[in-house]
Image (cartoon, rainbow, N blue to C red; front, side, top):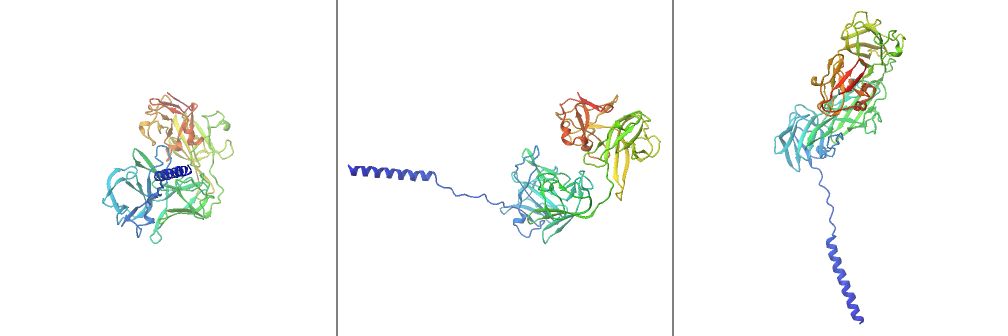
Length: 480
C-alpha cells in the first residue's frame, strides 16, 4: 500500500512539471526592442554641416494647439542656414529624397518628397525653417528673417521690426541683432510675418510656430535683459523692464537648436513726458454750456498708446474741444484757428474745432512724444465713417468691400451675414489694424474692443441671413 501511494505522488508531481512547462511556453518573456532612432537628415551642398550627424537631424517640433489644428501631428523640422549656391535633399536611412509634386503654396510651398528627385534650392543665403510632415512625407521650407514684435517695439503688435542677421560658419551660430528704443512693455521674436504657419496635414492643418517667446507660465513673467535667456517656439511674451535704448540679440545654435535672447540697456530714458491714458471730447453737440462732466470719453485703441477715437454725428458749425482730463485746466485743445474743418488731418491749437459740413465723423486724436521726449505732440484726424462686418459671420478676417455697411436715413445697415457666428465689426481708421478699431453690440449698445479687450468681442451671435443696424447718433444697434 505504501508503494502504491508513493507511485501516485510521483505521478502527480510529473503532471505538475509538464503543466508548468506548457505554461512557461505561453508566458515566455519577449525582449524589449526600442524604437529605432530618428535617421532623417538634411544633406547636400546647400547645407553647412561637415557631415551627417546629430546637428543635421530633423527632430520633433512644437505645434500650435489652437482650434482646428492637429496638435498631435507627426511633424519634424530643423532651423538651419542654407546656401543659394547649392542644393539639398532629405536623407532617410541612406536614401536621398528630393522634390516631387507641389501640394500647396499657401502660406509656403509644400511638396511631396520623391526618392531620387531633384534637390531643393533657395533663392538666397539665409536662415530657414525646414519642416517635414513625417506622415505624408511632405516638405515645407520657410524663410526665417528674425524680427521683434510687441507693444515694447517701434511697430507695436502690427508687424516685426527686422533685425540684422549674421552667420558664423565655424561655430554654426546664427545671430540676429537690432539696436533702438524700447518701452517698458512686452515683446517676442517672430519671423514669416505671422505667429505660425498652417501646413497641410491630411484633411486638416498642422500649425508650426514661427515665433519665439519665454518659458514662463504667463506673459511678462520673464524679463529679457543682459543675461541670455532661453527662447522657445510659441512661448510667452518677454518683459522689458525700463524705457530706453537697447541692443537686442537672438542667437540660434545650429548644432543644438538652442535659441537664446538678450536685451542690453545702453541708455535709460528718463524723460518726464508721458502719453495720455484718456481723452475726452466736449462742445456744442454734447451740452449747451460745454460742460466737461458730460463730455464723452474717446476709445483708446487696443495696443496703441496715445491714440483715441470715436464716431459721432455733427451738424455744420458744431464746435469741439478736447482734453485728457474732464476739466478746463489749460490742457484743452482744438484747431489752430476758427476756419471750418472738413475731413482730413488737422494741427492742434487753442481755437475751437468748427465742423464744416453736417455728417458722420470718425474723430481720432493721435498723441506722440516729441523727438527729445520732453513734450506730447497732438493731431486731430477727421474721417468718413464706413463700418464693415468681419470674422466668422462673413468668413473673412480682412476688410472687404462686399461686407461694408450702407447708410440710409442716418442708419448704417450691413449686408446679410452668410454664416452663423460671432458678430464682429470694425471701421477703417488711420493706418491701424482692423482689430484695433473693432466693436460689437453689448445689450443693444455699440461696444468697442478698446474698452473690453478681445474677449468682449464675443458677446453677440448672428445667424446666416441676418443683418445688423447701427445708429451712431444714439450709440445703439440691433440684429434683425
